[in-house]
Image (cartoon, rainbow, N blue to C red):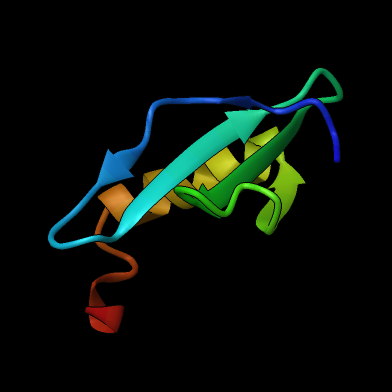
Length: 63
């Protein structure tokens, strides 16, 4: 497993807690809290864009 520096968990309603992390190679990671060994990864820039898009409401149709 890469050496990921995980942020504090972000928890929405209920038990949906996620963690975001980065490594020294410029990769971004998203995982469920407690399951950091099973993560989604992409470039740090892609992770930043995903967060911007979510904040802009581009994923609201998934709610």
